[in-house]
Length: 292
Image (cartoon, rainbow, N blue to C red):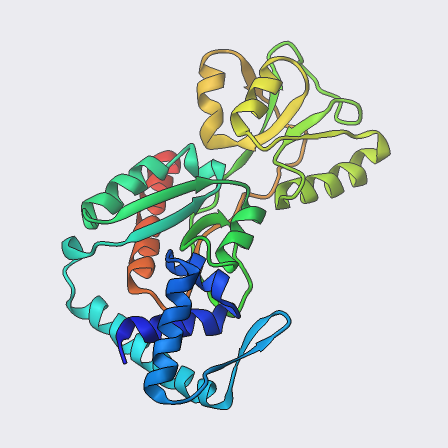
């Protein structure tokens, strides 16, 4: 019985099938099946039963899962207490929301590489809704997104908020929000949902929202005179300095964006937990530099 057999067994048990376990472990499906078969042969018992949706644990499989989880937890504690950071060689699949990608992500990657020089990092930039699904599907290891994610399996580290500001084209002195389109985050986001409710409550059914998945596109739309925008303060300064857009105050302010560094906490992976703490440190430093 080997460590890799136990790790593969747990992946199949948690994911409910060989295919998803193979994707999580980044190995082939035949390799997963072979490891499970070897473990069953060694133990002399079946660990899984096939069902229409995949596989489920047998009674013996449930017993083994409990022991294997204890072994993996001890292994992670050993890695956290003993292993030197510069000796860790692995792959970190990182998912990041665009707001972070355009602000402190480069500093985070630099600090991550300094702490873990042998770590390979694969970065995906997407909307928070998709990042959440990819994390829960185990196709990402760590996400920096509008959180937290309320799932029993996840751990969330709170990050500093992003302030949102109102922006207008330089030629539009007094926007009428009952008829002027408001450009903001994508339709499947918390800012879009809150803005929709607020505009309808204040200005009625004539209010318009133009959502976008690209923040840079959103600023360009404001600069082009298409509408006003509710967009991150930290990214608006460049456009204001270039005299392409201007701030304005309609009498109410949007709620700041709440972000978290979120990862699967069960089973715990010490490397991912450390990476999340590095993200929190970098985010705090960036927030202090911007807002003081």
